[in-house]
Length: 137
Image 1 (cartoon, rainbow, N blue to C red):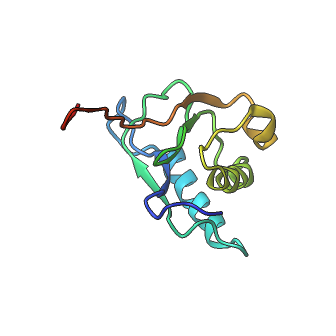
Image 2 (image 1 turned 60 degrees about the horizontal axis):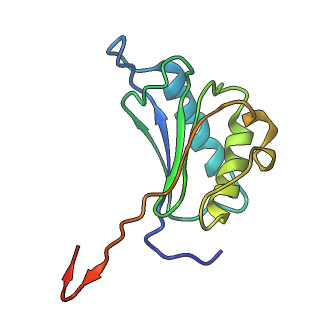
């Protein structure tokens, strides 16, 4: 896959509960299991892939919540992720996502275990400027 070196991929997992003010145990378990699974791949994902926990992502009604992000790509937010059941599907989706220049996938292209778990697909944000005379606006 050819892409620019600025196309860093990030998987972010909700690991801190804003409601209880304490760590989210299922989120922490998901983070650990996903890191373990990614580390055992015979063909690693893009070296610019990172996995991290974060504070509440406001998916409280659909825990565990996980996001896939990259510069210039659509962002995906999934919920109702079960650390003991969905790891293989998340790893498979990470590979699909890394291989797409725009990050876009149709539900039929995503692993079956993620069907119905998409909370949001957010289009990539692009900064645009228009040259007017000698100024940029």
